[in-house]
Length: 129
Image 1: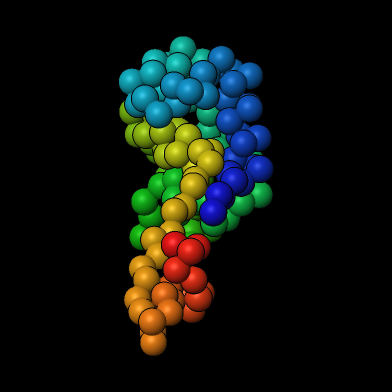
Image 2: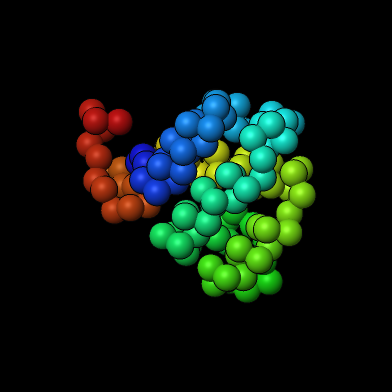
């Protein structure tokens, strides 16, 4: 099973790319911190603000906050207080959210009256295994 990234996350990555962030390098905190110093914290905060307004479920994934589902105002208050290194770590988490995830499911077989049956109830003949 494949899980594609949230389109709003991809849009935020595109906006960072326009600020000359390399999407491949967003997983590096040092790279992010250098670029934040170069372009300024405010531009990065604006991108995260747009993402927070549109996508509330991502707030908890991007930053550790006491509430399970923080409000936009709580998220932004914490984002604006972050230093360059902490903001760089938020961008690293954003890069993980932009990745396509592939899930592999393990299937165990057991025999039921000589017929192979998976845990999910699928019946297999001897030839198909």
